[in-house]
Image 1 (cartoon, rainbow, N blue to C red):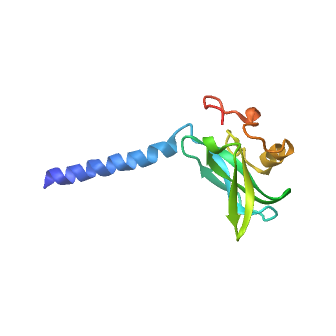
Image 2 (image 1 turned 90 degrees about the vertical axis):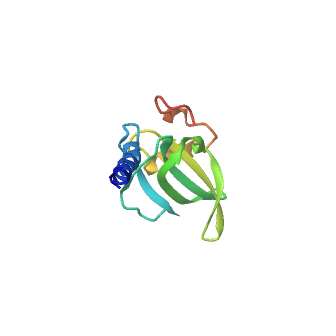
Image 3 (image 1 turned 180 degrees about the vertical axis):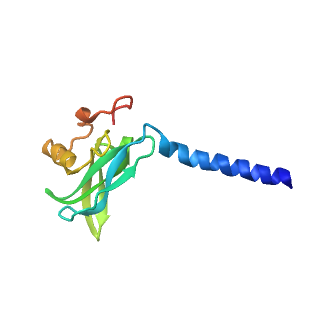
Length: 135
C-alpha cells in the first residue's frame, strides 16, 4: 500500500515537472496573440508563450489582392513564410504567415513590412532567429 502511494506521488511529481519545465524554458518566446478575424477589428493585448520549435507569427488573409483578415500568435517554424487556403465564415482566403523571433515582435508592423515585399516563400532572412535554422 505505502509503495503504491509513493509511486503515485513520484509519478505526479514527474508529470508536473514534465509539464512545467518546457514552459519555463529560456528559449520560449512570448508572442502577441489575436485569433483570425477581420483586420479592422481591435484585439486586446494577450500574450502567449510559444512551445519549443515555434516562432512569433503575424498572418494575413487575402481575398484576391485585398487583405481582409489578420491574426497573431505562435507558429511552427516550418510554416514560416508559407501560404495556405483557409475557410473563414464560409469564404476561402489565402493566408500568409510571417515570423520573427523576439518577444512580442509579431505586432501588425511585421505583417505590414512583409506585405510590402509581397510574401515570397523564404523571403524572411532579415527575421532569422539565432541558433534556430532558417524557416
